[in-house]
Image 1 (cartoon, helix red, strand yellow):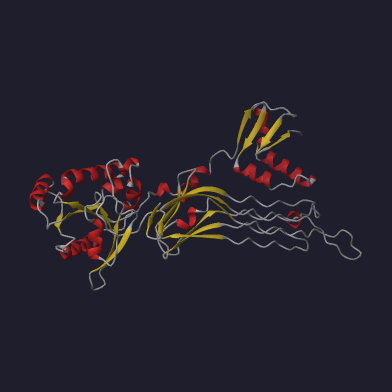
Image 2 (cartoon, rainbow, N blue to C red):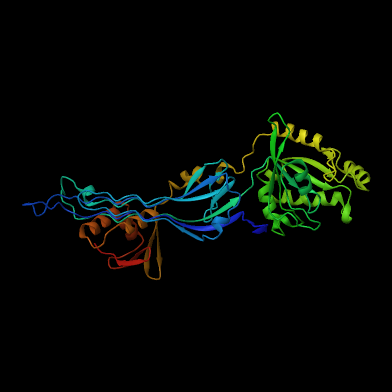
Length: 431
């Protein structure tokens, strides 16, 4: 998190999402003149509110989420008599910049990569409303005295990461002239000063070559040795660089301030390779800056001898020399470079859900003399059961038996009268 003037740039935020609980179903019977106990007419509850992330092109920072450690949606309205269904709760909309990735912190899986204005994803799903007793009416039981409580809303811990969307990422050591270059070739007005780590947050500039030929360049936070291990601003730099299509590696080829161009280049390359293969394999163009300074030609010759296969363009960002040739070349390279996917399919939650379908729906462990039942379906059933209604308790028992839990307990050696725990509740196992 860094300040630039009055703007706070935040590119990573972790928050807890609590979606809304579903409204409770209603146990009710018609009350009509001369009919003291009519048929069931209890309505179902409304759905709890979802928490939805929406990409908004007008935003460029996650600062609005920085101060919301917990985001909670409202509960759905309860059902009522006379078959009245409760209203659904309003969804909570969290607007984030384009280029934001939403990741489940518990599983490490990506929920969504929001790269277009208006892209959206449900971060946490609201619980469904509990069914009213009219929903349980059958020929055998026309007047059921049970209804469901609302389903609990989904709880997730998510990480939001902003990875700046740009065509060209400027990489290089601090103070090699990246900000000056961006200011010279675009309408951007980056703050520039004569000290290291000048650029504390990504700065974007649009290059317009005329004839509808435009592309976006990002000047990213400066990097130092050890960046891939979190030193300095390195991880922030690398995260943003991973989104760009090609890299323009800016080098102070004059070796001002006692710099060694070859050493600078090798340090940056080492950190890029250490961070990810995808970033290391991006198309790279060398921008040899400060051609107007003493020592430039000698260092350039040494660099070319060391790296004869590199594409090198000489410029002076200060005097705006050599920029036109470089910019036209960058545009040509972009035309033949497809947008690369930031994540593999297996990184996304939506593509791996099938892996869990054949898993055991519950687990049973014996802990400190108590049989502990765990599993989403069991915990969901438990949370939605009205234990003050006898018919609801009987239904709960039938459901557990149908899931094979009674047989499983017996196989494991459980006896009637043993204590069984579901969620934070302990009860006695009876017939």
